[in-house]
Amino acid sequence: MAEIRDSLRARIAQQHIAPGAKLRETDLAEEFGVSRARVRDALAALEQRGLVERIPNRGAVVIRLDLSQVFYIYDLREVLEGLAARLATQNAPPQTWQEDLARFRGPLKDLVGRGDLQDYIGHYEALRRKIIRAAGNPVLAEMLDIIFEKTQVLIRRIIILPGRAEVGRQQHVAMLQAMSRGDAEEAEKLRRSGLRSAKAAFDKYQRFIL
Amino acid sequence: MAEIRDSLRARIAQQHIAPGAKLRETDLAEEFGVSRARVRDALAALEQRGLVERIPNRGAVVIRLDLSQVFYIYDLREVLEGLAARLATQNAPPQTWQEDLARFRGPLKDLVGRGDLQDYIGHYEALRRKIIRAAGNPVLAEMLDIIFEKTQVLIRRIIILPGRAEVGRQQHVAMLQAMSRGDAEEAEKLRRSGLRSAKAAFDKYQRFIL
DNA sequence: GTGGACAGAAGTGTTGACAATTTCGCGCAG
DNA sequence: CTGCGCGAAATTGTCAACACTTCTGTCCAC
Image 1 (tube, rainbow over the protein chains, first blue to last red):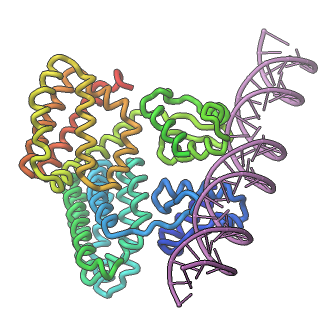
Image 2: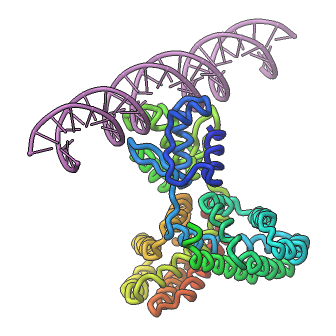
Image 3: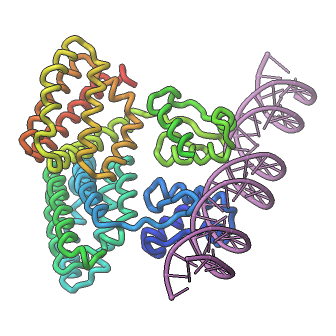
């Protein structure tokens, strides 16, 4: 069952299945070569995770993010990733962040300068995952997973907004500096203000993103 | 299906079913008068919510909170309920909190003084729900629900710790004052420090609680 | 008396068939 | 030409039976 669920989850998160699309149990059962019951289990799991909505007797449709939901989620990301930054700073030795700081200061600055945002997004997401792992709080990690699945596509669209990548890079440099000197409170504050400015960028350009 | 799931959820949250207890599908199916398939659906939902653990071919057992999980959850409550306090202050008119402030300053002070903690817990949980509702962020509400289900019993045990109720009451008065004057940032800070001290109280008395 | 193999019991995992509900096309009255 | 009702098709909801895994108790060899 986990296989089907994860496969569908990945497809939805990467929008290989469009928001609003209907998921027919029979079709999926045939595609995966299993019985309908197992597909139903997978859909129930995705419903709990908030990736699909199931209407009784009418089937499952992929959740469509509306504007308000995006703001709800950004308010949550602000405090949750702020917490992750604080815990990561407290738990990991300061030199852990040296290499990341160097990368965001040097090579990635060039990358962003050249407009090679695809690669930059890769490094951004890798650092995000590293911080969450270092925070060492599985419940927090689980919650960030859930909201990241819903907005993965959005985050990428915000990063490629004009000027946004460079601003974000500078904010990450500042945060990594705080983390490198073990200042957990400051790291939390900086991560929070970084996400607030990402939210503001979304607000400004929302009509180009949604 | 929702009926079975919610019934089981309530029982687990209130520990009418003990942590570590095995849930036999056949028994539950008979008790609710439905087929095993629907019980299985309900158990799958509870597993996703983190209330039960399912081991392949060996059935479902109610999750047993260990020490580290409690700390994980308190770190999360700190930032999530802090966010709720901030949003509630921003969204609701300041006079919304007047009556709560009066109640926590007057009648509840007497209640706590007399040691009538059962009633106090009721008011405490009512205010908590009111703040979450006023925050108006359903994703946040959902996440707080999930972690509250797991620790409901614990929270009640912390409140009845010696001296804890009065400290908590005073912290709530301070927070409600900030909310009454519309100071959202301060309300968030105060809620966070309140939860930090609750976590410290748990830390100190953990052997009496778990 | 102790340890291991084996068989039966108990419980979970999976499936296919059947029931209930919704959707959609078609005919018909206005 | 449009709106309404009806019935067939499609789709989801439910169930009971079967398959597989794990647990348990008994028997026998040593």
